[in-house]
Length: 514
Image 1 (cartoon, rainbow, N blue to C red):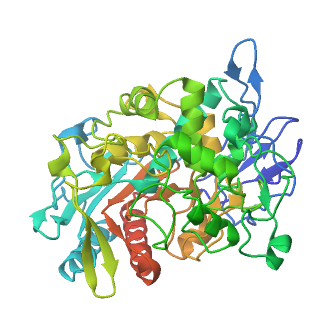
Image 2: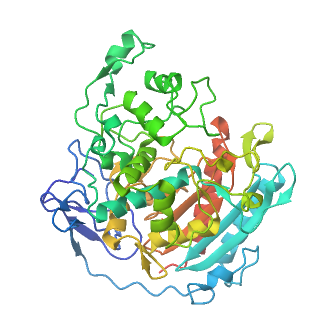
Image 3: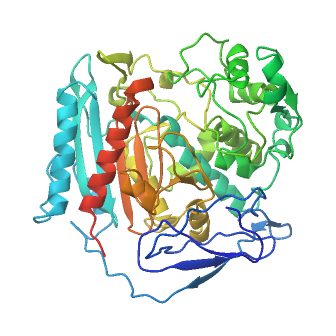
């Protein structure tokens, strides 16, 4: 974030009625974003060339606990009014609430109009063959504002989409992994400032692509490199600022190296170009990444890639458990995420939706449930894109974030840790529809993104390549989730942006404002 010890800054981009000023003490970082708000738009935060201290960067060696120090000064403002619930006050009541197109009426006005507009547009897209299906869930304070499903589980068979459909989450796996890392940091089992090579020796000798030297020999193998200015840290991986990329994210000598040497995993989301066989295991992929050049110096900028996948290997090394076991015990069981997993068993296969590919000539079947990679028990456990699950399961996870670490009285993270995840630290860049601030594992909305129909101010979000999408807003206690499974390469990405904008607009339109 460009903060130095002793500096104070007003943090923009959060709704509500208070403005917060956070003061960073020496060797400790900004971690508390409680109720952050401004009544006037503040200048975007720019990341300094000097790294800000990590909020979970220091550990108490004797107690084995993270020292999470922060100070918060707020200007006095009226307390927010209570947000009335739509249907039963019992937060568990939703477990038995049907995912049907009809909800109890909320009265006239923007809310009901927002629901109708969202449903009408998604219905038209299904009817026109633009999307195979859509399942929507929007909640506030744990009460549903919208819940419906449309379309087909499989466009070939025209089987209707079941209420408990299982979707490929792809990169919506990443926020779950980021939460797992923050858990380990809270417990003092790792520090965000630790070099990743401390846990994964294969990544201790990483080198950085040298564009100047490569210009003279762009196809040289090995790629021309220079030593890193510093080691890649756990924090760099959370930020996607490590320099690790994906083979399908470009065509530089680094991306070509990835393709030549199989620095990839078997998945539907690929470059479509010729490449060597992908890694079969997480250990194999990490070893290949250790030999690959970094795209840029650690911490220099946001570059989307296998950073979160590497965090999965860190989790296994630090916890001594497989990813399946750690996620099940620490996240899925407490949040009652009963269907979220890396491998879909026989009993769940009928609920796994088919994957489709959007093309200029229409939707094409891409992967059936029966032949899905998710059926293979030996598949690579990708912490950055390997989970599948239901909308109800992900709702539990998103509501935990919106409630600053708790769900149904079960605490997974401390409030200040969740606040740290929602603190803006660097920009993602990229397409205008995707450019936003980024925290620990989450894209963050602000006034700018909200104004152009993107992520609402104060929300944390991510999406999957199959067009799953969610955001969680701790200020409004608002959660919105879209599930579908449709790949939208190249020019078809416009459909992705339309789907997200529809959900964002509907969620804000239905929200009970203070």
